[in-house]
Length: 67
Image (tube, rainbow, N blue to C red; front, side, top):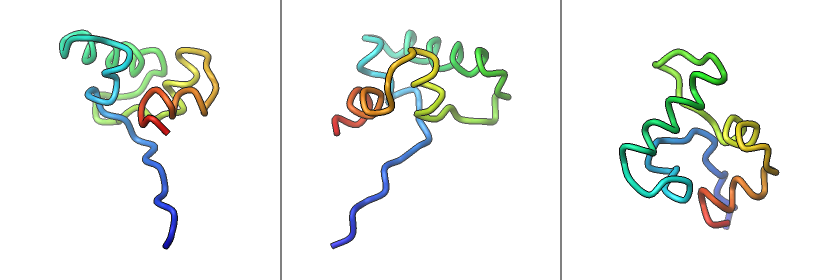
């Protein structure tokens, strides 16, 4: 059985461990996007999240995917 490749692209709902309510998740998501000068059509990645919070990739994956 092959190991499933982890997802890199994030959606606002993936930020549920960082923000309690939906509105705050979207605000955080958009703030991260603005911080890295991404256009609205681009999604943020787990790497953007890691750099934004200055945490390790392992910690970012744990927070998002529970790995």
